[in-house]
Image 1 (cartoon, rainbow, N blue to C red):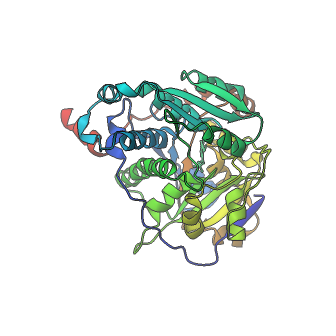
Image 2: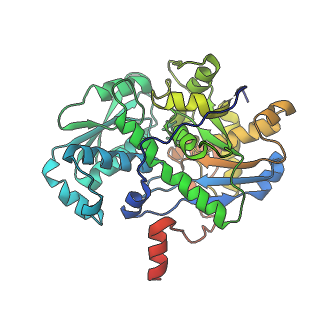
Image 3: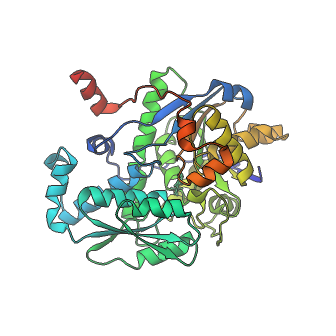
Length: 406
Ligand SMILES: Cc1ncc(COP(=O)(O)O)c(C=O)c1O
């Protein structure tokens, strides 16, 4: 562990954003399946906590990260805003939706990304028959650029860091160019709020999966943080008025720890690039404008890491047949680093003592296969073949309907 921050006052609940449940929408998209929740008793024993569960976001709608949950819901809400009505009763399958928006074929979706979000936006654009233009910071791994291009998107490399790519993407906004950013700034709030709302599906699945495993709900949730939209979704889900909340611990890379620095300062702080960590999804220099006040009031602690414990976490997961990329392994890297620390009081103040029930959000698969192989010593396919994935589960209404249909 390079650095930790611990809140010294109680957390304060925020009411959910003007909420609509995104799950019925996600369940109608082709290929919806709940991502797996893996119980890891041996890891709990090794790290000195009571239980560990890992939400393994290695595949969402065919892409190796959780980001489709936010991008798809936000584009859908944006579409509804443009047509001026709630579309939910007007379609059953994505083909119906594509027909409904046929007259908007000239639309281009544009965004900045360090990989996963842009790829998800490109996939959504293709589903709806729109074009996509994605801006990436200089230094983005070639495999990540190629993966976005493979979604039929145009990719522009911006000579600067992630924040600069956001500025360049935002400047393209026009009547038929819709910006789908997962970070917000003054006057640009709707889309990032919908992205956060879309991530709710992941947490609803966790609740149900823990219940069906008869496991305890978490006392600590480790959340990887880039701009903080995912962490804000965790906060809106878990920190509610009038009920006990788990501690939310933010995990950030050294050199891009904008949230940890903001929490220490009590105001939003930018950490300019270059951001050299291999946790590319977390290499963001500024917390999202709308996420910040939520995170300021709800995050219990932060753990700032270098790449070493994260690479250790990738190898440990690989031994279990679980593929996790650098960003995906960050939450486990934080748990390993805290558990290995001689500072027991730090472990306890973070809530990671022997009675902790830990939920790790493992948010991506191997999005840079060459680096994955360097770190792990095997390809993602070799690692995945070490493990038999239990039959995929559908949760919620679609799951119940599928079960009834046999
Ligand atoms: C795989 C992965 N995990 C976590 C994050 C962090 O999410 P946020 O930027 O909403 O904090 C990202 C962001 O790009 C990501 O790609």
